[in-house]
Length: 606
Image 1 (cartoon, rainbow, N blue to C red):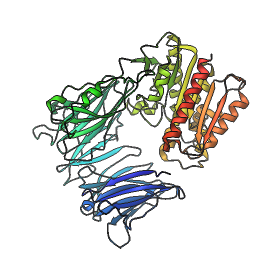
Image 2: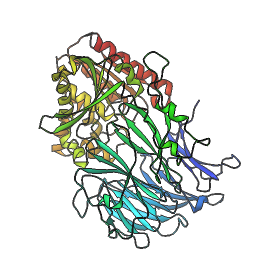
Image 3: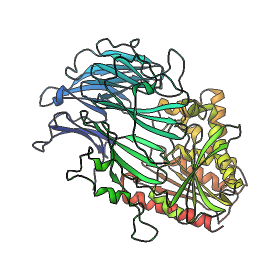
């Protein structure tokens, strides 16, 4: 057996750990606290359906949020560790449209309470030293915005994408106010807006803030000293703060901030991702800019025991005896453990149906690339989420067989601002599908992929994208893999058997509105299957334990088999499981191997 843990937080004094464990019988997560000194479980709290936890009073109290049966976070509790008294209900939101969320600032001095609905968003500040004291409203704005509040030496910092003075913005920005006089009108911008530069994320420690910036396809990681100089009036240009650019490899597609629990350490950890480099967990010393790869998957060269990219092996010997001294002069000239010697990464801008240029990324083996190779086109295009273009070891099998792996950053996805997202959502969802089809056509027209050897791949909402593209141009694809896809959009939004959130309706549309109903009907994969037309071979996976009902995949497969032209060389296969595949490494590997074998058999047999 195994246990599935979702949340875990160690108390500031390292005496306790609070965590939630999945209870299969209740289909919810149960909160527990373990004493790390004695190893025993505390008698309380033992709450079910817990969605957020945060420590207070230096580890003597725990604040947590409980969801209702529809999984809406609606109650805020405070539990005093070691007390026999019942947990204190701090707040309850009866309104079905209001959701609660908490997090502590990195210095553990405050807890922020986010209250958001389909009409507004608010952030309250709770003093961690006295969580039962009055909450302070520090910010409020429109609905569906992202906002995180941090504290540093008497100043609050707000990272958000909310409208500025009623004017919508295209990306996140950073604001600052005094902690002694907080309020919705007390904030002022830290940086002046610079055209073409998107602030993707920010992280804090006691001595620095680290910014993740995007300019077109290029990512940048830089640190700024804290506290900010008093002689510089904000807002100011980023260059006025003399940022230190931290080293990055070529072709970076994603930078994720690590846990960085130690607020008082000047070393911060990030995960650096690239289409031609396995994810590298990197420690940066913000005082001098030196860095060290602390963990990275090594890859074996084709059918040998020789490792690709031996930079990590050579630099590993340079680590100090305790493995933590990043100030050593020997660590200033490390090499990135890339695979770009073996695999190439190329970028294109593909004109869509309406002339908008869609970013397309290609990865292929330098040794096996030829004209007219088979190819696999990935897409997602929903929720403003960045398409996963990281190196994935399961794709190596295809790359070493000469396949070209392509990634289409269609509208509706993330990485290029909010306008890019909303230009592929709701009534504009067809833009995502046209973008994906245009990228497929580009690959064939340029001879990058041989005609009748193009396959599509989509996960969840990406399955909707690929299935809709197949409906639009079934002759374009030879095969497709749809993983737990969202296929029956119209019926699911009209009759939500499984809980849907306001974000789902904001993304795909409100079918009760006539105009949006017609828009949904136009792109919904289940409602647009072409009759008596040959379809590509399709491998559909779903589970009885998935967010999208298993009936969606079953209905779509049945209708495709019924309406389209039958071809035994192009089967439509439905693969159902009763387990959550992501919870088992064995099941995950088995499913990936089956998908790869399906693609090779369907495409290479043409």
